[in-house]
Image (cartoon, rainbow, N blue to C red; front, side):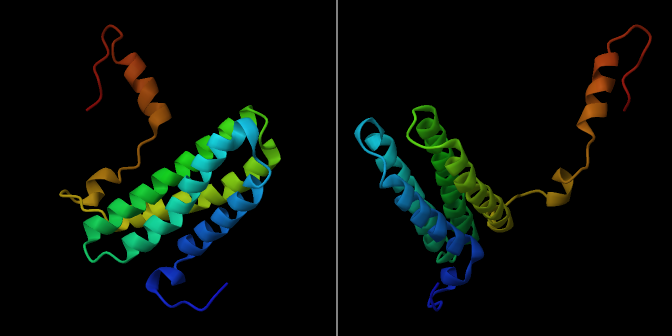
Length: 153
């Protein structure tokens, strides 16, 4: 792609978001008429992803970094929703949207991990890392209220 000059240039998530933005611009060339407002919003949201990644990576405060990564993550979800609108309105083929969403899913996954890494939590993260089998937990909760059965501690 290019020689990294800044720290964010070395981030896989940044490079992938640049690739996604280029892809969205290429696809959007075919969008006009009724699809123009969605196209314009999509391009702004797509650009927001790498811009917020770069800005966040440049922040010295870990809390600020996490906030910008969260903003980029939100822009990724916005792009996915705009693609849904374009597919539903006939502006984009489902297969094309699926390919682009695959990139967005990878971007969201990386940004989620980065935001969690740099985010500040007052309690120990181990408290929230309990492995709960929600299917069995739900079954037990259904039977808690039966006569003679006491809830498990």
